[in-house]
Amino acid sequence: MPNDGLLLVDKPLGLTSHDVIAHLRRTMKTKKLGHTGTLDPMATGLLPILVGKATRLSQYLLGSDKSYRAVLKLGISTDTLDATGAITAEKPVSIKEEELRQVISSFVGKIAQKPPMYSAKKVAGKRLYEIARTGAEVERAPCEINIYSINITNISLPSVTIDVHCSAGTYIRVLASDIGEKLGTGAHLTALRRTKIGPFELSMSQKLAAVEAMGQEAFKECLPMAKVLYSMPQIELNSEQYQRIIHGNFLTDAPNDICRGGENSLLNSKVALLYREDLVAIGEFSVNDEAVILKPRTVFTDGNE
View 1: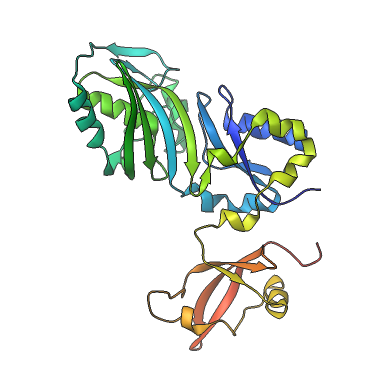
View 2 (view 1 turned 180 degrees about the vertical axis):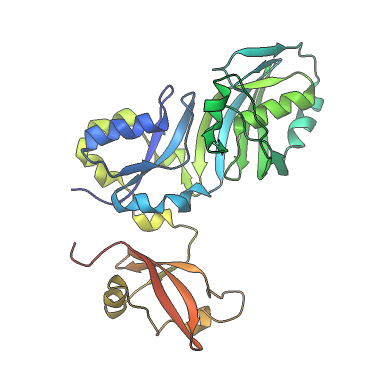
């Protein structure tokens, strides 16, 4: 019954991402589950669950672009930058729609963003939220992120709803707070729903309760492991190449036209190696004694399954 792959879950309000894993481990009767792209308890939406051997692929999803629908409330600032925190300041909201749109659009592009104190990011070996709970605050180096687009979908002051497409590592809570600061009103996040990660959309997911009700049948809902590596070049192996790769041997019959020179060169690049459309390994092209070779870096099968 168990399959290895990607299970897309619509996380409900109030649960941590770890809570979702705990629920599914019980109902699917497996410990080999992991999530990527953590969502706060107050956030809902798309949570990719890696199942079985696919748990070894988490790094390839963590860097994916993400999209969110967020609701900001102007005029009130909180210590957590969202509705779960204590109010730290209140200001009147008296702004024109044109000004609001101009300020929000000014955040599109590459910007520097400072991680919030209430986050899992580590500073000097400690989680920032652990430090924040003691009442202390430490200096955090800003990180460059990319906001590809922000679309305002509703204005009902003091609340504003926006759709955000952004790079990995973006904190929407911080974006909400920064927009409020630039407006001079302050702001905090009151609702957040993740709608997309890479090519995976919320419409492709299932409610957590529905997945739990499936029990072990939920394994059948997993997308193939190769789908996780959507941005990585993929090569289909023949039976002889497959046998060499799964036993840790390199290939010397790699197609040179896609390995050497030119804009399509894969030299020093990682590639997904498939056999009969199933992911069997991640390989890397390199040069050895003037010859191009394809060497397996991570092998997911021994051929006996």
